[in-house]
Length: 137
Image (cartoon, rainbow, N blue to C red; front, top):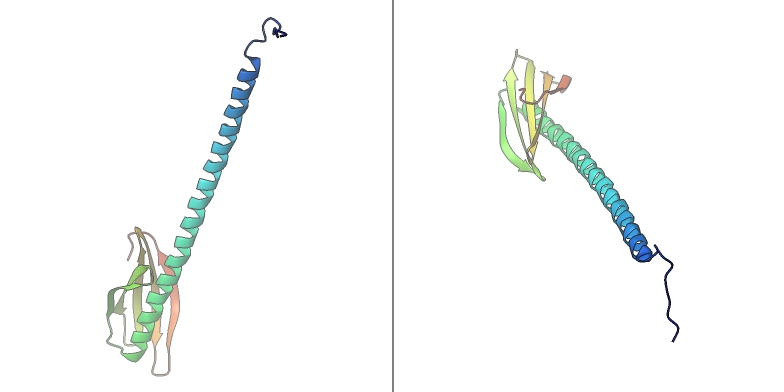
């Protein structure tokens, strides 16, 4: 039997190298998972924003449709639509002008829009609208 002797100072070098490689690989994987997690959160927030926009558009369209049928219509109570909830309030400004505040809620996020509507016997039209800041309305 031939005995293998390691040169002096190299005992455990292979183990140390393997541990260093494992540490570097785990560090790279953790950075990759962190990047993917941040991307996933950004995509989720963006998709919720798109859904909130669609929900407020639906609430506004519902209020305008009801106003077109009845000039004395004043609100749509909160009700579910898809994965969120919508509501709207109509304020009469003059005989033919109205202000609509439509709100959509998705989880903890809320989006509110304000529209000024002109109603004539021939048509009902949105003349101006804007997104209200959080807490506005």
